[in-house]
Picture 1 (cartoon, rainbow, N blue to C red):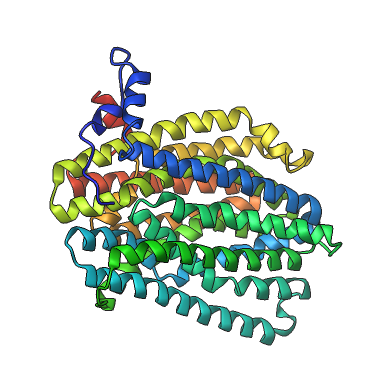
Picture 2 (spheres, rainbow, N blue to C red):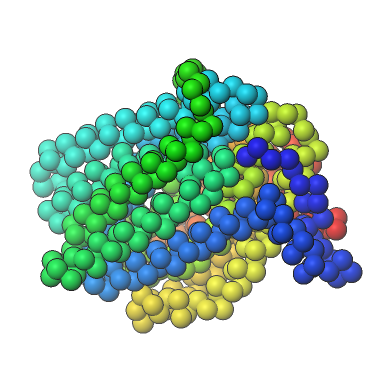
Length: 460
C-alpha cells in the first residue's frame, strides 16, 4: 500500500465509555484509507466466501454421500498443499517487494518481480502436476481405483491455482482487496457449485471425479479471469519499464517463507490427515464440519494482515518506527476484539450451523469450543507473524511455525489414536497456543514494544 499511516489509529484500539465506542468507530471507518476499512473489506469478502463454501460443502456432502465426498476432500487437500508450496513463498514475499519498489521508485525491479513472481510458480506447479500424474499412472494398485481419476484431475488444477495464489499476494500488496480476494474465495467456489449443479441437472453421476472436474474448470476459469483483470491494472503502474530480475534476492527472501507455508499447511491439514489414518470416515466428517464452522474466526487475522502487510513493508523501508508501532498496535486490537466477539457469536449458533451438514454432525458442537479457544488465543497477539515477515524476519517466522508444526504432529499422534476427534481438537488448540506465545515473545523482543492486543487495550 502506498498510504500514510492514519494518525488516529491508536485511539481506536480500546475506547472507553467516556469517549464513545460508536462515535469513534464510525468516525474511523469513514476513513477509506484506514486499516479498519481495508480489513473489514477483506473480512466481508471472506465472510461471503465462507457462506458460499458452506453451501458448496453441504451440497457436495448431501449429493455425493460421505464416501465420495471424503475422496474429493482428500484430493483437494493435495491441491492446497502442492499448489501452496509450488509458489515457493513468492505469493507472500511479493507483498513486501511491490510496495517497497514503488516507494523507492524502482519500476524496473517492480516489473521484474511481477513477471518472474508469476512465471516461476506456474512453471514449478506444472512440473509438480506432471510428476504427480506420472506417479499416479505408474502406481498400479498402490492407489485405489476410486482415487486415481479424481486425483489426476485435481493435479491439473495446480498451475492456475499457483497463479491465483500469487495474484492474491499482488492484490494485497496494492490494497486491491476485491481483485485479490474475490476470484479465489468467491468466484472459484461458485463455479464449483455451478459445475455440480449442471452435472446434477444433466443426470451425471455425482462422484468424486465429477466434483474434481468441476473444480478443474473453476480453477482454470478463475485464474484466467483474475489474470486479465490484474494485468490491466499492472500495466498502468509498470508503464514501459524494462524488467530487471533480482531472482536470487527474491528466492533468498521467499524460500524461508515457503518453509513457513509448509509448516502452516501442516498446522491446517494434519489433524484431518491423522484422523483419516486412525478414525472412521464419519468422525472425519464431523470434525471437518466443526473446524469449518468455527474457522470464520481465522478470517479476522487474515483480513487485518491483508490490510497492513503492504504498509508495514513501506514503513520499514522509510525507517518510520513510530508509524510502524501505531499500525501494529491498531492491527492487534482489530484482530483480537472481532475474533473474541465472533467466537461468541459462532458458538451461539453452532448447532444450527452443524445441522446443515446433517443431524449427525451436531455431535461436533463440543469440538467447536476447543477449536475456538485456540483461535482466540492466537488472535490475542494480533498480526505478529505478518509484522515479523514484512520487516525482514522471515527466519524467525519459519522457526516459530516449525516448532508449532512439530508440536502439532506430536500432539496429534499422541491424542488422536486414543481420543479421536477430541484429541484432534486438543492438538489443534495446543499448537495454536504454542504459536501465539512464541510469536508474542519474538515480536516484542525484535520490535521493542508490546504487540499484544491486551497491552494496547490496557493503555486506553
